[in-house]
Image 1 (tube, helix red, strand yellow):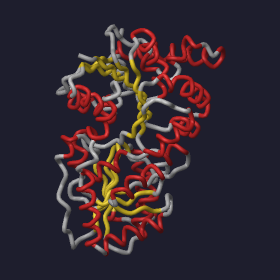
Image 2 (cartoon, helix red, strand yellow):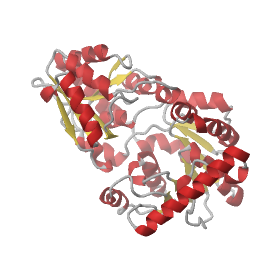
Image 3 (cartoon, rainbow, N blue to C red):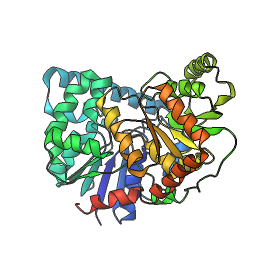
Image 4 (cartoon, rainbow, N blue to C red):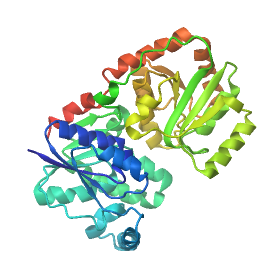
Length: 404
């Protein structure tokens, strides 16, 4: 039996891509171990609900911040990580490169098993994974879930140099390269002259989740029901939720927008200000996020799924939001920001409309068009239902396992 270690950077329950990979390898007869360094971002109930029925092994670092011991351990990890960062930036020593962006791996439990494959989905973990290649001859799957050069350039220029240097240094050690979109796959091949097998593995639901596909609605009356869902609701950032609010305010047809996600008091106050400014009234409702395994089910009853991405850097331009595929599997029409990563799916499967990112007026017109033309709306819904029959995780991932 082959063994695989999957390195997670935070709770596996909110790491949908790694969660699906763990389930898939187990279904193929592999012995699966997931290292889960930090428990605390999600509630204990959410974490337990996702993990307790999984048959694979979970290693935890117990830095949960829920006990005195955990808090002391987290403090020690933080101090050690600060020393690592200072060492790398002052001396650029290879010996601690593994931990530069890997705070959660400091004081990790011992990995004693002789793994055949190590899967990482962050550039942060790629140097660490090479340890297993050197020690055991383990093959590496580098699942680049973001275009990290663009991402770090945008929000953490201090670490950008490290990211570029280490991706260039280690990426060709991978036995397989995975990306979330075709445009990103082509960019990484060009950036690093990657010569190994590479695959587009979209962040699509699994077969089990696909069984939740709902029939296309024949809704002819009532407001057009719009939805945006995510882990957290934050205004005035690259997710573009403020653009969605402005667009709904400009709509002439009857529409209602639902934001589904966690929201803190600060963001509630900002949302209230937006709502008053745009006179949204009952056009806007807010709901808590669904459990990770129940997202698709939670979208039942809506008509259109929205994305608001603002492509301020290459990562936003080249990647594709998970929610796009959740909308498709829920049988919704889609109105999406026209970025290369999102557009490749919307156009290939004809599941909806595209608008110029950040253009609230254009978005409002697209919304009004579907609100006024329910026949067209239902055509897009039917296209989503058909697309969902081939857009599922096991289909995209099947080619990967053949090269291992």
